[in-house]
Structures are given as C-alpha cells and as structure tokens.
Length: 607
Ligand SMILES: Nc1ncnc2c1ncn2[C@@H]1O[C@H](COP(=O)(O)OP(=O)(O)OP(=O)(O)O)[C@@H](O)[C@H]1O
Image (cartoon, rainbow, N blue to C red; front, side, top):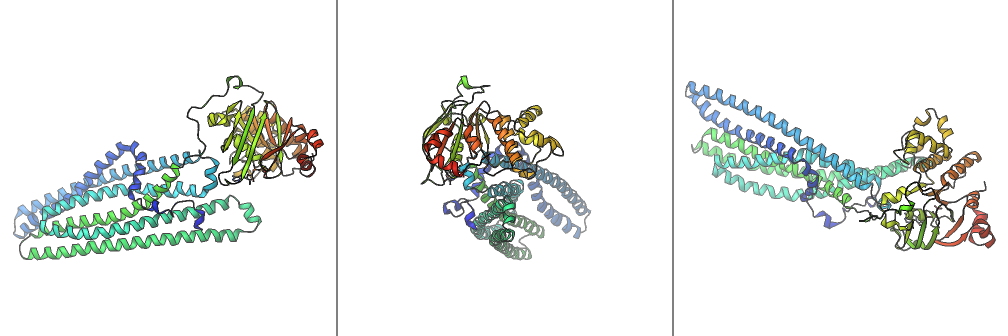
C-alpha cells in the first residue's frame, strides 16, 4: 500500500531534519508579532506568579507555623498576610493564564487558516503534471490532518514550551538560591535524564512522519474510490474496495502504534528518571534538616521548586513529542508548497496583438510549428511529432484519428497545460509561451467530452464560463446552446440544483450546459470534443445545433466523431500516431482513399 504515497519518507536525507523544520513556519507567524508579544507578556507574568508560590510557602512555614508553635500573635498575622498574598498571586496567575490561552489559541487558528489557504492556492496553480503524480486524497489529507497538527503546536505547544522553559529556568535559579549543594546534585541528574529524552525524541519524530504518510495513503485510496462509486458498484467491487481501504487504515494504525509505543516508553523513562532523581535528592535534604543544616521551610521551598522544575521537564518532553509530529507535518506541507509548476508565466508577458483584441468576432489564428511533444510521464513515446499546422481566423477544423492518435493532446498544448519539447504554438502570431497564462486561457473556450457539473444551480453552472455575466446573458447563452428549454422544465428552472457532479442530468443535457458555458465565455478560439457516446436522435440534433452556435464567428477546432461534423468543417486534419498524415476536405480525402477514407467507413456516426 505504501507505494500509493508520493511522499519522501523513504528518502533518508529527509529524515535527518528535525524540529528545526518548524522554522519553515516563520513566514506564517511573522505577521502576528504583536499577538506573540502580548502572549509572551502574559506568559512571563504567569510563570513569575507560579515561581513566587514556593517562596510564600517557606515564609508560611518558617515565619508562621514555627512562630505559632512558639505562641506569638505575630505568627498569625504573618500567616494571614501570606495567605492573602497567595490569593493575590492566584488572581494574577488566573488572569495571565487566560490571556495567554486566548492569544495563543487565536494565533494557532489564524496561522492554520493562513497555511491552508496558502497551500490550496499553491496547489490550484499547478500544471496537470502535478496532478498526474499526486493523488487528491493526499493533498486533502495534508490540508486537514497536517495543518491540524501544526495548529496544535502553534496554538498550544509553543506556549506550553515557553511556559515550561521559563518555569524550568526560573525554578532552577531558585533551587540554587535555596540550596546550592542539593541543586548541584540535581543538575547532574538532569543531564542524565535529558540525554535519553533527546535520543528517543528523534525516533518519535520519524515514526510520526511515517504515521502521517500512512494516513495520507488511506485518504488517497478513499478519495479515488469515492469519486468512482458508480463504476465500483457496477463491478460489485464494494467489498474489495472496503478491504483495500481497511488494509491501508490498518497499516496507518500499526504505524501509529509504533509511534505511540515509542512515546510511552519516552514518557516512562522521563518520569522514572526525574522522580528517581528527586527522591534521591530529597532523601539527602531530609538528612540535612535532621542534622539542623537546613530549616523545614527551606526544604519545603526546595521541594516545590524541584517539583516545578521536574514538572517543566515532563511537560517539555510531551511538547517535544508534539513538536516532532508537527515538524513532520510542516515538512510535508513545505514540500507541497515548494513544488514549482512546470508551466510558468513569462516574466514579461506579451500582449495580444492590438488589432485582434476586443470584440473581434473573426476568431484567432492558430499555428503549430514543428511541434514535438512527449508527456512527462512517458518521455520515450512521442504523443505528437513534427506537427505543422496553420489555421486561419474563423476557420472550423475537424480533427480526426483513431483513439490515442493525439487529438486531445493538441488541445492540451493549446491551453498550455504542457509545453512542447520542440517547436512552438502560436495564437494570433504570438508564441503562447510569451503570453500571460490567463490571457491565453481567456482566449480559449473548451467543451470537453466529460462535462464537469459543479454542485450549484443551473444558472451558476453556466455562469462558470464568465463570472461577471448577468442572468440575461446566461439565459441567452443557454438558448444558443439549446439548453434553455430543458432547464426551464426543471422543477426550479435555472435555480434547480444540478447535484454534485451533475448526477441529475442526462449526457446530452450536461453537454449542452458545457456548450452554454463556453458560449457565455465568448472566446475567440473554441475547442470542442464531440461526444463519442451515441445520443438519441433528438438529443443528437440539439447537441449539433448547440455546437453550431458555439462555432459561430470564431475559430474552432473540433475533435469529430460524426460524419455531419467533418463534412461541415473547412478542413479536416487526420492524425495517426501523433503525426498529421492527411489534410483536406471530406470529398478530397475520400477521393484520396487513404487513412481518412478508411476511418470514415469505420468510425463515424451517421446522423
Ligand atoms: N497524461 C498523459 N500522460 C501520458 N500519456 C498520455 C497522457 N494523456 C495521453 N497520453 C498518451 O498520448 C497519446 C495521445 O493521446 P490523446 O489523448 O491525445 O489521444 P486522442 O487522439 O485524443 O484519443 P481519444 O480519441 O481516445 O481521446 C496516447 O498514446 C495516450 O496514451
């Protein structure tokens, strides 16, 4: 199952990075400096308040209880005062702790939201090559699980760590002030304690990354299957798929258990060593009191400081575990953020030639010059070879060829989803690599075979073609695409919800929505992929009518599967194994008696 992950947990060089990876979060934390400072102030006040408690205790014991024993009222006053002071400390501690919690939680939520936005915005600009190698489930898992881990660290662990560091440092100083001798012994012990914690911490971190990877694998498996439910059920593979998912969940579970075991061990060792050391030192302290070298209050103060220091170390080891998990998550998110799209905008994009800009209804010119293209995932097989093609403004070109001949690939190159390895593609005489990607794609309308219907109503689904279009414009486009009538007949007309992935529409209806969307966009170059699936005669006629409208007044490239379409085209381009093998109109090519004549006899739907 692990092979479904494209993550780099197998790369040993990646495993060496540590909590330092968390520094990758700094750009996200920087904007919230002010909030950090406020949180830090609250933190210092709270830690300071905690550290005064043992001192107050000693006062109480040495000056209060001992004096009461000696029968003085001065002792009672002192106890009262000390308790009052203690309550004051509690008030300060409460307010400061709440303030710190509020600020730090706010930062955690804010930073996580920012990271989610940044990762998503980065992912949606990636070229198709990225989506060929990365499963959507994995990206989703990173957006949810990994960011949640980071939220835990930023929102809680950082403040816990800082608080405990302060308590540790402050407590240590106070220990020395209280009893240098006992403290020196404790320090030696601490060094012995911290070493194993660090050692185990490393292992926990590695295991935590593995664990996150396995969760991402399981999400990837689930994501793929949920998107293909009809196929899964038609093949009655529900049980097999559930088992496959279960295998990957179990794998994630056993990896998580390894992490949990390592962490349990870490906690046990830490507690054993720390408390062992404290008991030993206290034993020494008790002897000092018995021999009169130390007051009872002082030993009490020492015990409290020691427990503060011990508690701080315990908490720090917990936080280390959390931080290490978050370091794994950060590493994975930064990896995702650092992926560069193979298709980039030119530094200085050229404008479309002025004479052709604006309301020109003649369409764009298209030129392919000696184009050679291999898909990145199949570098040894040319999907297109030596394509030389010149299309005039307003022409309709039919692309024909057997399945896999390279027709769709021509579209992909025009949309600049990929760049050719050799040669270049021009629109209106400008190399599309020199155009801003949005300018280029705004020039092009596309009607794919498989229409994507978003979970929104009919109006919004068509408006996807041009988001600023008015309702009237949307309806006009629907009329041109022969979609108006069927939409009107839907229970709520244009407001009818079309369902996730358009499950409530027929194939022909979906296509007409897609055509309306493309017409609304009003592009100068239209790329149409005629459906291969046979529609009933009436649907067929309506789709044909819609396509006719879509072609009006613009340059059109159509992947043709119907005789009627190819007959109407100005020119037919015949592709075979990624090469243009014949060019001409229907009559010429039939007369030629070559590939086209053969294809025509086998492949075209007669309408
Ligand atoms: N993303 C991809 N990665 C690798 N190879 C691909 C990819 N997409 C298509 N191909 C390959 O490139 C070749 C051309 O494919 P293309 O989709 O352009 O064919 P087509 O003529 O449109 O076929 P069809 O009519 O079946 O859609 C095929 O051999 C196909 O297997």
